[in-house]
Image (cartoon, rainbow, N blue to C red; front, side, top):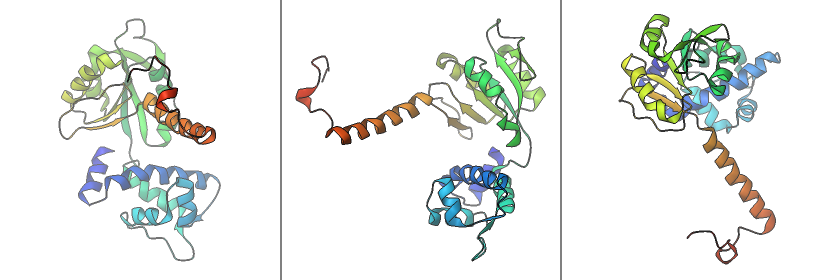
Length: 235
């Protein structure tokens, strides 16, 4: 996937556009499942949660402009976006860290339909190594480099504890992998040319808490003033 995205960058497709392409693809796949043959830019924009002008500009980078009065051909646009994202080929993924999150990711059935194949599971816990999960045996982290080479791994998913994530990332990069999806609650330092996508559920929850607090403030007349704060608050 990263090689295709690198080509997109070389052709001048903005990073923000690349980040929105999966949203369009998800919406289009839902429409295809419902039997829709065409879709207007307005309807696709609503389904993807963006404005229609931005959507039309994004799709123009792919050379897709739709047909006036008809809209976009759903199946062809799915193909265009899938090709741009590199999803028309098979990508081998290794998951490092097979705790509750790693097991859930390994058992997620949506990867295959989107061009990703979980090819390896690795962990450092002897109690976990050897377990069979989603048709794969969990291998020891000591075998990381050999597994990456043997299985042709292109993308590594880190679901390790924070303390172990950087060391594992260093080994992954040294083994030649330049695409990492990081679930560990830590910022990783990697060389230039290595792409990292970070998923931090606690941060997302904190953002939602912020919005919930704002809603509460509007309903109650605003946040508490300083003189109303508990004495324990250290300013």
